[in-house]
Image: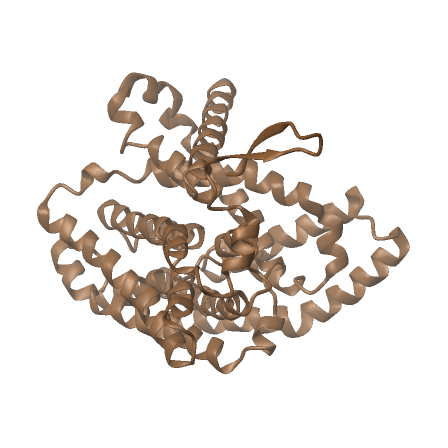
Length: 437
């Protein structure tokens, strides 16, 4: 069995790196290529092309091991996401960012929830309509804060006014969406029993309150004392304690009845303001999680995504409707609010395009929905396509809109959209070539 797992991991990592590199040449973020690579390994492409080879690599007996690795990776990933959550965005939230964040949640949530009766009747889902409505609203409301942040860093626009407004609004939307998702999962786990649902929601909110009001200041003081003694170095014992806390928080939320990743996210959020811990963990830890665990998660998603399962015109129409509603709710809705707050049409379009990015975080929400029995595989595939299309739109839309805005200079300096080979003269007068991609 070990040999099969190792072969599987080798195939996943190679596919992720190749696909990420290819999409970077197409002016898309690397993470978009990794998502596509994971989907291509599943029944939408690799399996029907070479079924025997696919079956020999992704053998069913190793899937439980694969699933556990994916879950642990998601816990580490959401811990990192929580640590990168900047609470200063909430304190500095201006009128424009505040209105954009509210519309970015309320409009797509309402539009997504309104689709529940149509989808429930057509797909004959076992989930009650109101549960499906809450879930669809949440899935369409989320913005992929980590991916958006990386896109903005690659474009060099994190310190611009548009960048600050957008990341502030996205941070509020993500925090709200996670609380909503935790509440919905609690309702599903309680089989929609009103008392059990209220108890799970109450325990979830209590856990959040304890983490932010009690655990956060205590951990901050302990970490200050620890780093003072260890000269800002995180040794093996310190890292072990941190991992035990992470797993413990995941276990608590799992016992509450919601998903373990939420506990890891809350621990990260509690430690988000501790710059010394952030520095001590370093890029190596974050890069390892991104390079090893993320491709596994994307492949897990791909193995459950089968475009061929959309076998009728009606199902493709529902998929298209979900995509349109998602775009209207975020891109159009947030863009119009930005325009109303004094931004030019191009600037408002840039804000809407960035808020429309769903990518990784939407895929996590969608996977939770599948695992909790809220979705079947057909609706799962539809929502994966929605997340993929809205993410693929981001950089092309910015390319069309950024000229004439404050984003023009930093984006031009970043070279993100330059894909041709540039010739320049070196100091000795000899021409040399460099490719900026």
